[in-house]
Length: 356
Image (cartoon, rainbow, N blue to C red):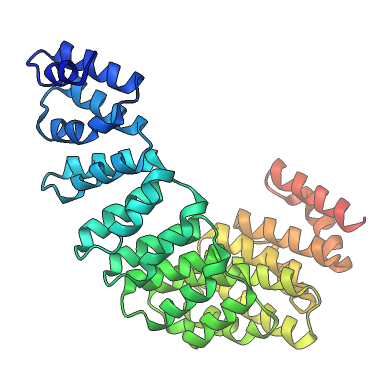
């Protein structure tokens, strides 16, 4: 089948003839017809033929084809632009240089399409190309690049993301930076975040959620004062995150100084007394045991008589963690009076653990 015959079939009114020609072009790798196929795609109304054109263009991982396909970025119709992204993402190697040039385009929308294709490749080897969008004048393109850096856990870009965070005047960009730092950051970068936001307890809710995720991962030793302020000012509305952050701080820093333990215990107890759900109250009470709040022993024993199931469980587990002799004695005395079999089983298990 020569070129003239192929072109005649591709221009036929018969969809079957078009499909036959496309199959031949694909099987014979006749990629120098890519410009013809791109033009066909613009005008083709038959869905099966359009899909065949797309599949054929996908199979040609050749720079010349990638360049022809990238011309679709300039089309007014959204579905053509989207198809170009999908095709170029399949080209991988041959498309990278074409897309890199497209990242320099004057049109921010074309730059975004090039970026989308690179991201869709899902290839960490192109992260350095994607990172070029960090200098884009359009905030949405910068956000897309930052999110991809996080998804690929590209730690080499931590300082760059911190720099963007420091200069950010856009709320969505700020959140993207924080969420990416959760994935690629470390203790030093979290310290840098606290220099950017020295009073996190005053952060808008929109920023505080990703900030707390970051804090939970890297609660460094000198972070206690900030943690206590957060608990005091934002503890109730963010009770789950604050409790997780406190626990993370305790685990990360292992041996607590007496003053640290005392202040943490007071903060946790205050949070427990606040308006938080029963399950969170349970987590807070149990945390008292994990911290080693022996000064709360009497309060915990009194909670054994609580009418709230979750408070009772929390108290039982906390007293077991403290290995409180008075507490275990109180649990044993209460054993026959606990209202449910589940509570009795939890109490027996706690008694057993405390004796180990």
